[in-house]
Image 1 (tube, rainbow, N blue to C red):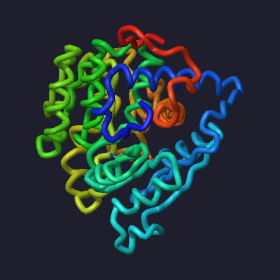
Image 2: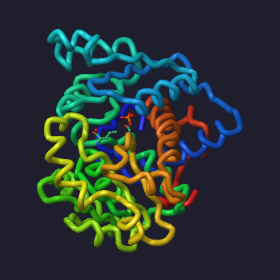
Image 3: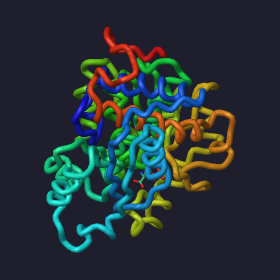
Length: 326
Ligand code: CP
Ligand code: NVA
């Protein structure tokens, strides 16, 4: 995986995704025993943020620190990008200093341009279309709690946004049956649905986009939602709240339609009282903090795999069929 870009998860095979999860599991268990491997000593990561962030910013910076490397935080406003330097030239200059770039951007085309012009791996730390880092953490959480992916029933309720688009790809690649319930005006990207249909041919995963949240949640093992007002859509906030809250809020009544041991997931930040009620978010089946923690472990694993050779990795090579078993 060395030298690759991670922009949407579509570029990784199921085996490669599981490889990241396997290494994340090793790094997580070692960290709980106080072990920190200096796998990325003398390596640097540039982090570009066009939008605010709590989890992505902190988990990437701490990931590099714990692996013995260094992270340089760059808000877009302090770069020459803000004065008209092109994204491509920014990528070329950064490629001469650091070993990897992670960027959070408004427009997905910006991350694509960055990746095309950079000589080093580029990670999408969220764009208007995809949030692959979030999905890696979500997959680790699902695997830890459910022990498998194949055949699991996942319901996405709410906005068909960047996290939903990435969930479509991830579910199809790993064989999870996903039902997205959203208003038709806020459906996922047609391209993400197309990719999900393509990848599901190999895994047999079912992918459905409907508008009825009760039908989506019925018998779901995993229920996921996200903000109704993503960064960059603030001007539509009032209209969006009106369209979403009455029907798509994950509250006790709606969540009770899932299986009795269904888990509740949210990438955070949550807008309590909008897409989710306190009762569900703070309830016994909410796994949102484990999910947030797993950003750190999966990103450490991804950084190692993108920057190191196979021989430098702390594990026996993964072989054989894809297995969600730990
Ligand atoms: N989930 C997520 O990406 O959080 P931040 O916006 O805080 O980085
Ligand atoms: N869909 C949200 C995710 C935030 C982590 C947004 O893009 O703002």
